[in-house]
Length: 379
Image (cartoon, rainbow, N blue to C red; front, side):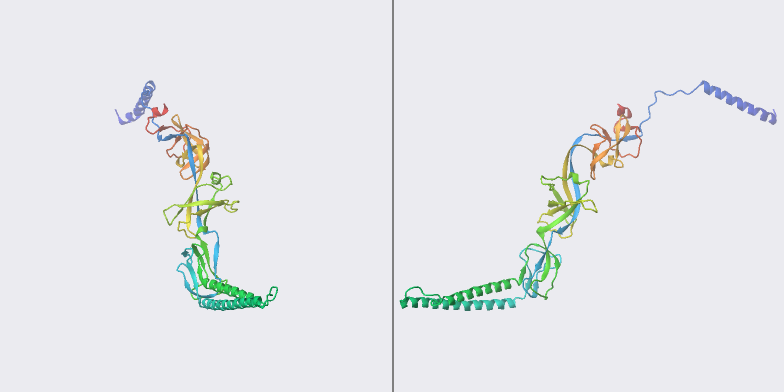
């Protein structure tokens, strides 16, 4: 058979073969294997059945140590500064009774000596006046005259003058001693020097301000709370916060006990926060301006649903496990901290909360529980 003949009949053969194959496939359709295993869910999740809990709310804040008020240290006498306490410097810490400033006391000592000499002289004059008055009284009695002698005869005016001079001299001695004592200027309380106004060798006048002092008993920390935190702050019958408070400094690992002593009546107009005033215990060596973190024990919530933050998506919904599928559930919160959220709407006791982190999946997505087969998960 020639090549030209093959070219003519080859298309016919191919067409006939294709028709035959189509007829065979039609008469022999594929059958499904009804015993084949069902497809397994692609996502395995862990769940937590929800139950009512008691949850203590912790409120966190911060602030810097400050003094309630600065007390000026004044000089009550004038003189040259001849000695300063080592703590008499900006930020220096001192104890009550420490001699912070010493003034030259030569003039005060001389004045005391003069006053004491004057007192001795007036006392001698008083002795003489008393003797003269007694002599006058005896002379009157010996004269035999009737009646009582008048004051002039008995030399009473001279006696009274001598007595007055002694009292005046005594006051002068007391004033001189006081002036001498005031040349040593002591700390009225334990605290910190916030402003140093004089230097060694400087001459100061009476009434001059030497420094400003902060009392260690007058330290406080101002702690802001947000509007979201305020409803969970415990108050006593007088409306004063009664919460326990612990402070912590970056300079020490030891907790610092403190007491809330006041609460502002108005919100800060800029930050819309309300400030608490806390007073740290005296035993802690705190410095003005030191940064402190605060942990306040808020209200204890009873019978609430608590979920971990990693099960909450976009702050508004969670996933529940229901009969082998995911169910997206919208929720609302009454409280949230760094670890947990408290739910007041959207969830019920017994709901199976999905704990496994998931992306954005639609409701109805098939899942299985960790540690179970798909069949066991649906049963």
